[in-house]
Image 1 (tube, helix red, strand yellow):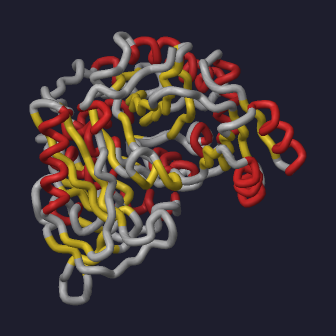
Image 2 (cartoon, helix red, strand yellow; image 1 turned 120 degrees about the vertical axis):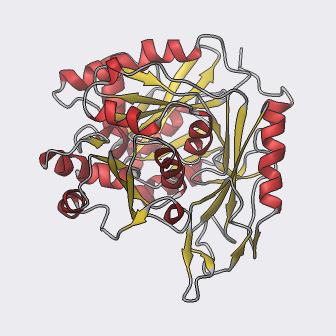
Length: 415
C-alpha cells in the first residue's frame, strides 16, 4: 500500500512514524512534510488546502490511501476531491468536517443527538455576548466559531477580556464553564463502526500549573490512571454513536477521526468540543503505544470495512510528550534559530526546517516534541524530560509539570 500523508507538523511526524512502521505500507509520501518526516518518507510540495492539487498529487504518486492530518484541508474539501478520483481518504468530507469548522454547528448536532455538553449561545454582537456572559457567570468561556489553530478559546475571570475576544472573533459561542479534568478521546470511524483509541490528557496553557494563555498544546500523556472505570464505554454510548447517527441522518456521514474533547465533571463526562482530526500533541503519545499496524487501521476506516478489522492491540506502560516551544510562543514566535540534539530517537518535529547548509532551524511556535515511553507514567515522564535536556534551542521554553499531577495522584474529579 502506498500512502500519501498530508501535513507537516508534530501530529504528522507521529503519523508518519506509525505508518512507516506498518509492514503493509510499502511507500510513504508526505506533503509538505518536515525534516523529521523526511527520514521515513519521500517529501513533495503541495498547497494542502487546494483540493484539486492534492487530488492530482495523489493520482501522480499512485496513492492507495491519503491520510489528511490538519483540519484546514478537511474543511476545504480535500477528502471529497481525493475520493472523487477513486482513492480512499482518511478524513471526513467538508460537510462532516463542520463538526470542527463551526462550533455553532457542532452544538446544533450535539443538541439533536442528545449529547451531554455545556449549555451555550451563539452570539454575533456585543449585546448578545454580554447577555450570555451574564447568564453563565465567571469563569467566562468564549470560543471563536471558526478554525483558530487550537487557540480560539478564552477561559477567563475577566469579563472585559471575554468581551474583547468576542469582538476580535466576530461570531462566537459562549458556554457555561465545565469544572473537572479534561480528556481527549480519539475515535476511528468509517461512519458506522467506531473504534476508540486510548484516552489522553493534554496541557493547553503555556505555563506550569495551567497558567498563562492557551496554546496549541504543551504536552500530553496516556493512559489516565485517574479516569473513571467505564469512561470510554460511556462516551462511546452517550456521545460518539449518537453523533455518528445524527450525521448519517443529515446525509453527511462522518468518516475519519472524531476527536472528542471532554470535561469529567461531577455529573459525568461532558463534551467540550469535537475536532475532525487527530489532536496534537496527544497523537504523539497515543500512537506511541499502538501496536496494531496504523496503515491497515486507517485504510479500513477509509474503505468502510472497519467492522471487520481485528481488535486493537496496545503496548503496556505509558507515554509522555513534552513540547519545546520557541521564544515568545504563543505570541509571534522567534524563528530561524539553530537546533541541536533533535536526532535523538523520540524527538518529533513540529516546527522545523533545513537551512541553506543543511542545519536544522526552528520555523514555528511549537518546535519539537520529546516523546518517550516507560513501564509507568513516572518512568515515561522522566525519559521524556531526559530527551528535552538533550536538545539545544536558544530561547526555547517548555512546561516542567507534564503528567506530574497524574504521577503524584493529585488529579481529582469534582463531586
